[in-house]
Image: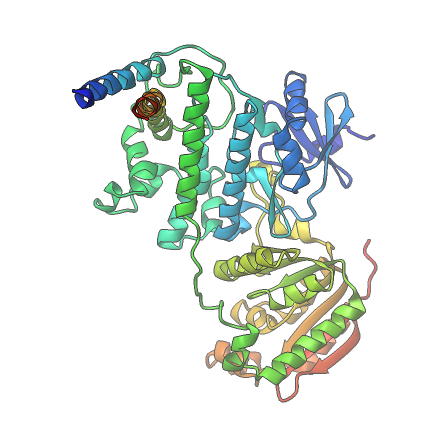
Amino acid sequence: MRTGEAAEERTLSPQSFRDPAGTLFEDGERILRRVNPAHAAGLEAFLATQTAARAIERGALVRSQRLGDHLYEHERIRFPSYPCEWPPEMLHAAGQLTLDLACSALEEGYGIKDATPYNVLFRGSRPVFVDVLSFEPRDPRDPTWLAYGQFTRTFLLPLLANRQTRMPLASIFAAQRDGLEPEAVYHTIGPLRRLLPPYLNLVSIPTWLSGRETDFTYRPKLAASASQARFILHRILRGCARQLRSLEPARRVSKWSGYLPAERAAAVSYTPAQFAQKEQIVRDCLAIARPGEVLDAGANQGHFSFLAAEAGASVVAVDSDETCAGAIWREASRRSLNVLPLVVDLARPTPAMGWRNRECASFLARARHGFDLVMMLAVLHHILVTERIPLEELFALAEELTRGYLLIEFVGSDDPCFKRIVRGRGALYSHLTRERFEAAASERFDRVRSARIDGMERWIYLYRRRRAIS
Amino acid sequence: MTAPKSFKYATTTLLLACLPLLLSTPAKAYGYADPGTGAFLYQAFYAAFLGGTFYFRKFLDRVWKRRR
């Protein structure tokens, strides 16, 4: 097996080099973890617990196989995603999983040493805890959960800020790896609110106590007995779970959330017959392409993502609207569909982040040639008009993303939706004809089929990329 | 009277129970995540309070069983 320096150079996880217990790295398609010898026995013992076995069985903990010499191989989660790309619903689900595992591990004598959303990835809409080294045997008399502050900063406070001020999680986690400090939230709330729960215990008291530490503060304190310590920790975790429940994201309505679901399509632009026709065209194209992996770019509420998932594909559904991505997650979870919704703006996709820009890969680096089919339905006019991206650039991006097919909807300049977003700047877009669209596509793609939606200035094209992937 | 005695006993127990947690005992420090300052102190006070209720609950359980 090749486990040389070149492979180890490409670390995957933000905890990978911060955690002294081990290093995660990629070797081709394999995900490997080298464990520090001092922590190997602890990890092996944890993987033998009921907590680990049950979590692995239900898909909540990453599968791990010992290869020997303190080297482990983990199952690969198909499309890694980061908290800055999650709607609040997914951050909430990741927090719940973290607490569930922490409570269960506590009963078997293990503690969870860090509580960050970077420990969690999503397999479709289901969270998977991937950092097995987070679990350590705990001192039976230690009643302190050192990761409590981190859980507050990275789960509770971002959810609170998102709920109260609609602050997007992208703006929190893209700017700060470790979430929100209580002090940062304290200065955004009024004097009365500071005295009310949940601000009082999550924000105000920690802020008032901040800076009052002494050398004594961080010296570990032990309970009188193991049962007392377990009782305290259990209550602390239960309190966190109660706080998390109170911050469960509410269903919201946004500018885009009622844009294109079937039941409202007529009010927006489609008659029910037209929408049914579009749906049938998409089904037919899915039957031709038979994709294993699909990217639905501009997924809105995920109607066509769900069609692709029902056809057997694993779908990544991206939309720039957090509310839409949240609605997709709720529906995909409810229907157990293999759809991973992410808050990604195609015109400003997630950049590479972290130390030396290597901790979190950019969205495009992760998505490059990663899909058998890329769907761009009813999104073209937003990219061309709102974002002012040239047509040729759009096809260049599509070619970068797909390794097979592109399903794209052309929206003519006479379409009411097109006119609505042009806002009087029609002359700027008079060149955007169907002929120009087809000519731009033909530079990189071969047409497989096309169909017009009856009575509309909309055509749906199925293309296949011409050049082989090098 | 039973109630005041119970109250005194409970209060004393609560204070005594907090003592071990308020007195430092060196032990192995786990984890590498920043525990924060305010959140850590808040947790320490909360843990001390919970440590007290641990004994308080046992006492209440005993009173409850005796009455039954």
